[in-house]
Amino acid sequence: MPHPSHRPLGVALIGYAFMGRAHSQAWRTVGAAFDVPEIARRVIVGRDEHALAEAARRLDWEEHTTDWRAAIAREDVDIVDICTPGALHAEIAIAALEAGKHVLCEKPLANSSEEAERMVAAAQAAARRGQVAALGHTYRRVAALRLARRFIAEGRLGRLRQIRAAYLQDWLVDPEAPMSWRLRKETAGSGALGDIGSHAIDQVCFLTGARVASVRGRLATMVPERPGPDGPEPVTVDDAAWATLELEDGTIASIEASRMATGAKNRMSLEVYGTRGALRFDLENLNELWFLDATAPAEEQGFTRVLVTEPEHPYGGAWWPQGHVLGWEHSFTHQARDLLRAITGGEPFSPDFADGLALQRVLEAVIASDAADGATIAL
Ligand code: SOE
Image (cartoon, rainbow, N blue to C red; front, side):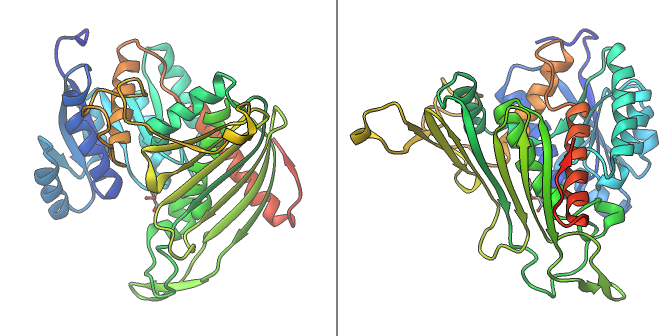
């Protein structure tokens, strides 16, 4: 697929830690797996010159800089990929959009709906100039979850009644686990709620195509203080969150997010129940979708395991022959593919910044409901 300017699309990546590495891998592999415009990994950005230089070498970026403004000002950069803590998303994304770049921003979009509103305004202005502003809820690109959405849209589950969406991890079970930016409100916005609960809520919206109408929520910080570099520091975000969402079509979704779920490593589990069928998915086994057809004769009914690795499946055939499983990182490559296709006039990228703002309002409603003893908050 040629790019109109006949030169590679240049990428600047802001951030080189966990997400920076995942996105680097995607930019390295996307052209090998998919028919997309050629890209060039122009520059990677971070704060620590020494660690950054090493990351640039290992992750195979042409150049590195500690100045993100210089990176986004470059003529040979077309796409700015933001993998920083949430507190920097708004400033960098707005500057990049105003500089005429396409933007991919890691989730959650921002740390407040006020920031998210400004980002949406910048994205709307940029869209009029043909730029794309994409939000990285990567699990929308897991093949089994795309298939789940297809089944739901085709009516295979009938009318939806109830969804359970839980994202559970256990990396904070140990009270001595150190402080990090993810545990400070000023850098992360919220805790398990925004970091992983946002994925669970996004999946509910993605799978159903419905918006959230009202929310009840509950938050808990189970370890209020953790070791910091200069002694104990207060944890200012939630360790775990629960919410009940009512969708605009009347479906009820229960959401759980926790970093305190002993033994749950990276377990996003989804269950969708409708009048004609049901679906189950677990990220720890991400090539599998379990489907129950409730219209089958009663004596034949049971959950069937669909191994989502066939050429007929979403993103199928691009990687390996049938039956060869994919991993967590492939979803990031799928995300890069979909972004490149959106940039070159293909299907619009979803979720966009407006979806991120809607999700931010849901997160804030969970926090407001918790503060009001579980009151229902309408959106
Ligand atoms: C947190 O532990 C985290 O890395 C999230 O930030 C990611 O969004 C999720 O995909 C995996 O877990």
